[in-house]
Amino acid sequence: MWYTDGVPYIQQCPVEPQHSYEYRFIADTPGTHWYHGHVAYDRSEGFLGSFIVKHPNEALFDRDYVAIIQDVPVRSLTETFYTVFEWLSKFSYGYDNVNKCFTCKRIYDGSFMEGCFPISALTINEKGWHSQTDVHTRPSRLPLETFRIKSAEKIRFRFVNANNDNGVMVTVEGHKMTLIAADGSDVKPLEVDKFIFLPGERYDVVVEGKRNPKKKTYRIIVETLNVYHRNMTKTAPFVGLANLEYEDSRLEEDDEADFVHSTCTMKHKCSVLNCPFGQFGDQFPYKCIPAVDLESAYPIEDKELLEAKVFSEGYQEHFYNMVTENGHKLKLPSSMPHYNQHRMSEISKACDSECPKNSSRRGDPKCACYYYYNFPLNGIVQLTMYNMFKSDMLLDDTAHTMHLHGTHFYVMKQGFPDYNRKGIMNVTNKDIPCNDKTWQCNGLEWTNKNWLNGNVQGMNKNPSLRDTVVVPSGGYTVIRFRATNPGWWLAHCHTLFHSVAGLAFAFRVGELHEIPNPPEGFPHGCGDYVAPPLQP
Image (cartoon, rainbow, N blue to C red; front, side):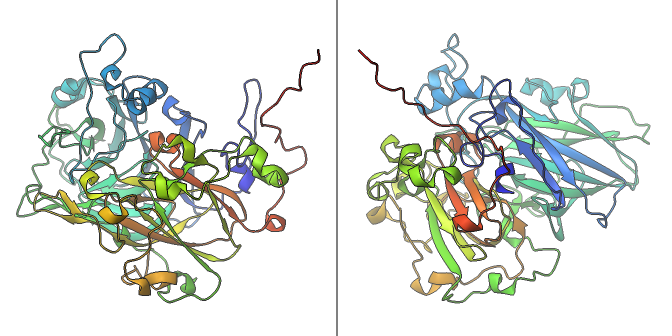
């Protein structure tokens, strides 16, 4: 039910100190899932965890592991937020350490990678180390998470990116990975050397134990995508480690780890799933497999949902600019809309229709409002999320991960910008006409008007089912779902800084009479209090 999903002020009031709130739901969606707090920086303070729903007929492996990855900031994220958004990078390492100014790093395509703040560690299941020198030179003596394996065993890893802001690339040293699920949904098995995932995404992979391992312990290498400084000079990514230890090996421990990925060569490039860009530069020994290439493991019964045609009814199409939030920064209502339809103007701020024309960047306070859509129950919804801005700021934004509450969706199509031979973005994707004449790039539609109303060409005919997806910088991602889950929901970027800053929108599925009412006694009394005038 929608009121057991946990989004504050939309689905429930925040749980106050000295109070409790009990969630009950039917575990009817198999797969790798996770939970986290949704008020301000709950997630960054460790209020998160995994929960696994196992299908009674799912394939069994010799071992089944969960690996939750977290980026630990140098300072609390509340303090860090103000150093970033108030342009106080001088204080990124603390108010008493002003000589160590932090500058944002860039990833392989030249764009920024989400959070612009220093981190002290990348942890796996809350285990890691703060010194990068130690991580690189003496990993065997660090308190790292250790996963055990025996020769010829097949083990399943359920990777969860619970990072605040960083996308990471994952490598199991010396081993291939077979990807079998994404965001809890089974996909056709795909063998890869590495995968990238951004905050909120989950990938399940199978690793097969070597029959004659050459080492007792191989490293699971988790590294940020930052390879350039702001001025495009080279830098090294930040690295976290876990151990894959062979229980039946008598070899001695060592401190060797293949941080340079020596098995990837220009002649035999390593495959990398889910790049938040279209390609690596020629100088890197990697090749991208975009997320849209993943296919469902099972036949999709709802054939209409996959059709490329002009829909005449039962269909809605929307375009959402991730850079400018369509000109509207989401400001949550002060109380639950379900109980306050008659007084929405009192509990929320209406959106100004002029904002998409005049609000050029996210975070414009005058354009903060309760921005939401209404989707008819059982209708098909197509959402095209594009990530574009004017050309002289092409490299000043980031890839995003968009997460929808209350529904999974099919990833139908992704479009990437053009790149030069070094893999750096040249120009945004031409399928959506974002240019210097439309530099705010709000309210855009397809360049080819024949694609409107569902007739998009080049869509995946057997798409994967996801709940979180990458929207590449300079490009777009098209998703579709049938709105079968009535209630009030939230869609948001899963980069924590961005969602807190308002990169989100709400949506309602169904008319009021079609939305289930919460049970009697449901607490919904949050809201503003205005004191009566004082009597003389």
